[in-house]
Length: 169
Ligand SMILES: [Fe+2]
Image 1: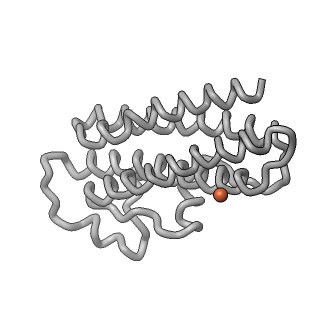
Image 2 (image 1 turned 135 degrees about the vertical axis):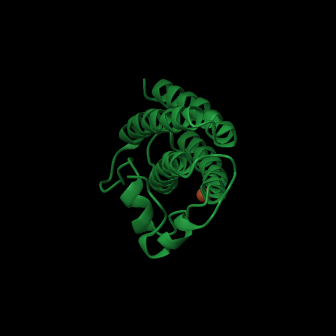
């Protein structure tokens, strides 16, 4: 079932939107982007937390590296959310709504610096897969604008995963 915004706001899904994409296709495309948005948001929050709490011999480097990563994702989630809205679906607007859809697990422990880097590497690999899946859906339904927004996310998360793997080894 496609995610059609928050339940209490579901009415918007019934509005007459005609952007040249069938309703079912439009909602499927929005669902792919929403999963990417929520997963990116959760990874943003985790990375910002690591920026604050990282310790050890590589503190300065990782503190800055994590800041660059969370800043990039913070900017990206806005464009993803606005793409969801352009497809006629409400974007998740609370931590609860985000975590319900996110495929990235929140941090609950106190990992050391290397565990942080390895966790983020795995998470970026996962978000790259989620972005690629959203891209596939967009391509299948002819949603070019969504494909344009999502394709660079695949590149970004694959590149970031590589850099984190290189940092951990
Ligand atoms: Fe800071």
